[in-house]
Length: 147
Image (cartoon, rainbow, N blue to C red; front, top):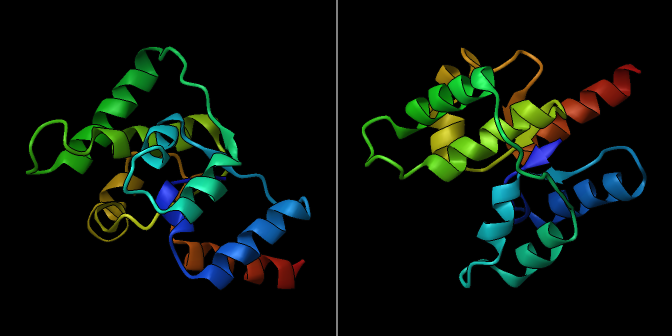
């Protein structure tokens, strides 16, 4: 699963649980390549820098035509009425989640989760779910009980 840096700037108990799942080999955490830039920002909390920085980072690759079209569609949805380029980093994060798979993209970005999730779901593959950390843990628990 892929994550936004803000996934680790949440409830400490939930973050520790997620990291425990990773340590137990139950999940793999991958950061979109742009998250590295975000966690290096001076305003990023040290705890988030430490946790996110210890994860696997996706490597940016050249995009083929279909991938470029999907990125453009995601960028257009997230931009909405905002200034052009304002949400490009978020668009790249969501795109990389589709490109690298993983099933889930954990983010607490309100624009992505609340405002644009429905529109994004129309262009993203059905195999990718955009979720908050709490939503992911709820889904995981439900699956774990059923299996």
